[in-house]
Image 1 (cartoon, rainbow, N blue to C red):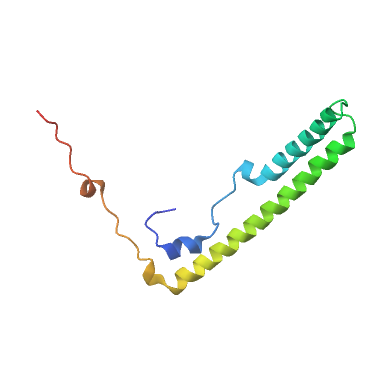
Image 2: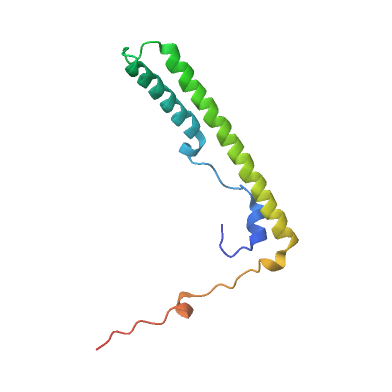
Length: 117
């Protein structure tokens, strides 16, 4: 994606050509399972039982935490999609507030370096 595009052009692209990284796709399942199983092991430790006794507790806590985090992630993505839609609508209504800036060369911004003798 070019940085020479205007704000409206960038917003109209949407998610075209973008793919979520692997960890962003599966983090609720990974973190939820880890937290759930760790909580079950901690409960067993506190009640002086073997770490993996009552395996159904591990399965339920791991699955439950994964489901909760997947729900939270879905709601978060819906929130940000709505927020982006509001921004996009505002930019479409007020394009004069978002002018396309002129590109400058590095030579125009920085002075040439001259060694001191």
